[in-house]
Length: 389
Image 1 (cartoon, rainbow, N blue to C red):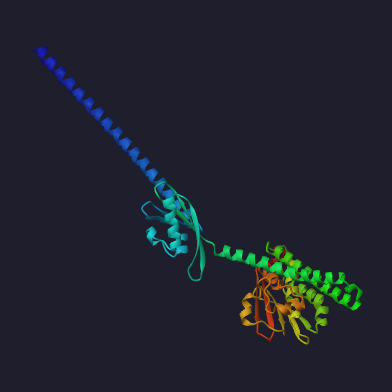
Image 2: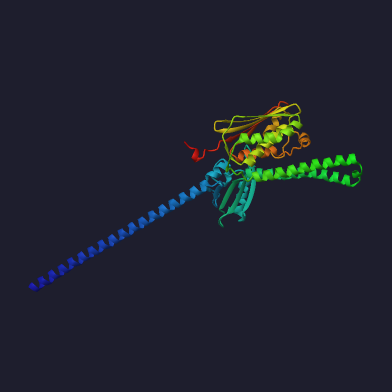
């Protein structure tokens, strides 16, 4: 009996121990499972944070681009459009069917069907703008990436360059042809006729000088398009006095009175050479287009942190319709008068470039037969540290 009770007690104890061990083992497994779940959740949250950050960086980069970007999926849905695309197209299409202009929509569809990239340029909007759209397939299922660029300014610059080359060629060809004709005339016998020889020799000299001025102005324009060296401190009143003195003989020969008024102005930061070119061209232009008995008044003053150069003449004036274009290269109000006086058509373009390179501006007021007034405003140079109070 005692042995039976002992065995039963041992069995019960073993069962209790086994149960305790099983319970502990279950709790351990549960703890490990919870730990693994927590680690998985932490890892998932880290992945989501990384993914969110990557999307944010991607969206920031794409939104800061000047090019419009549009992603179209295989079903024709527009799944992404950046801010630039909205600006270029005036809105964000929800699907390819809503994509305008139609030329861009057709190009995107063609890229999806053929699997080959293509590009189109279209004119749209008021005022008119030119857009270049490049459509690029990004997978084999028909998804397409469309990139839209505003090429209006590039096309304008291309047109300006083409016009410039055509005008420069024409302007150089005219005196060159005249020089050639005069030289051939002299070689064919005019040398034996002293009065005729003198007349053709003077023509050669005039055309050679005109050709030289055109080349010189073209070189100045080319240099100025690269900017001006603003390292000097230049007194514009001193520059104006030098240029008035330089052109005094020409003005006297033309029967034009020229007068300078200055108030003792502060310096401007810039290039003495380029500013002298600006003043010279304005005064020379005024003298050329002022008839005998007229006058040219030059003044230099300071106001509101600006040094102001004003060149006023009593010449032929400029029609209102021509005022917006007088600073264009080779633009002339009266081509015959310009060639007669030896003008190249580049002087005012040079003036504009110099003024803009120095952070300033040039404006003109004029009335036909009542003269013109050109005004240049340049910022006053910052005072050196040693001059600070």
